Length: 69
Image 1 (cartoon, rainbow, N blue to C red):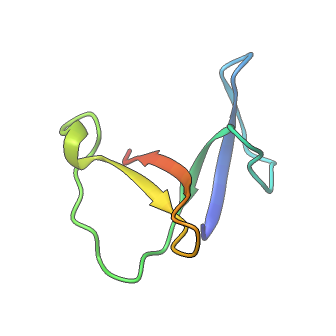
Image 2: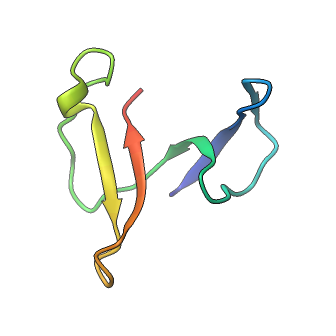
Image 3: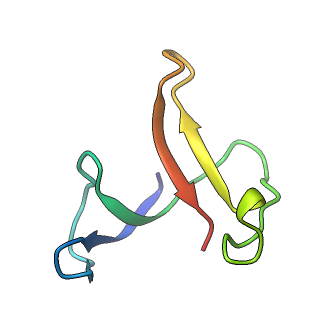
């Protein structure tokens, strides 16, 4: 993750922009840097090509999921 833009408070549905980290199971709007360009669509336009999972290559564990906004 290169930037954490905001974290959603699921009780109030408000975005908190002053946060510096995501905790387990929180929802956030982030920017990520990839090793190669990714060809994606916005999730609203094409859900199959607008969602992804992040996998830890050392453990093969899923560490996150995401949607392209």
